Length: 231
Image 1 (spheres, rainbow, N blue to C red):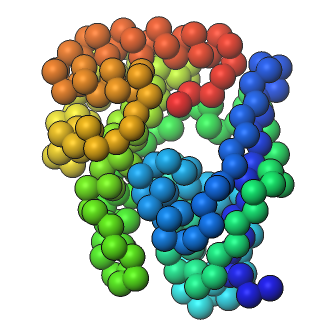
Image 2 (tube, rainbow, N blue to C red):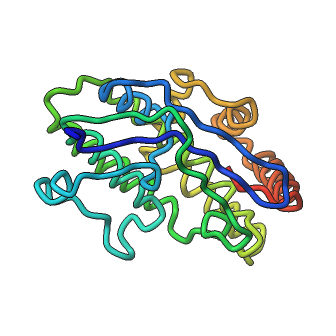
């Protein structure tokens, strides 16, 4: 009854693909959860949480307006709710069953994604500087950019992205030369990445953009043919 925020484990299902994943939260305190959220070990969804109205109204919390951090609005809102809640309860049972349909927005091309991820990084960095109870290494935030970079690359190869090779390659080059993204790549060894994502970053680090392009194209074609969600 005293909880301002309730966070539930969940099931994600993609119909007609035999794809189902179960995410269970084994964390039972706010600081540990916040640490895992910043490191990218926990996704910042808003749909697996219950919010006490006063948490939102007293802290004047709101989702970004349309056109502002539109592709990462869940992560923006969830981080602030977790950081500002005085009492959080965790439910290990999977009480949320999230079904990703063929027309789900997560399958579509996200315009302006690289700017949204970069602005979320900057906004979170500024916000967390004012949270006195939470001690963290600022470099932990780099995982947002590293994983964001991989998402940006895969985003370029979604079927709705009808542009030529040069335009896709130029955008990837542009992003990896942005200072914040470039600096995050230098810190990649701090984080545990999957083999394929680690390969992406190592290739980028060695300026092997053509190879990144080919791998991303083949990977996304295969994933699309199996009706899976892009990572």
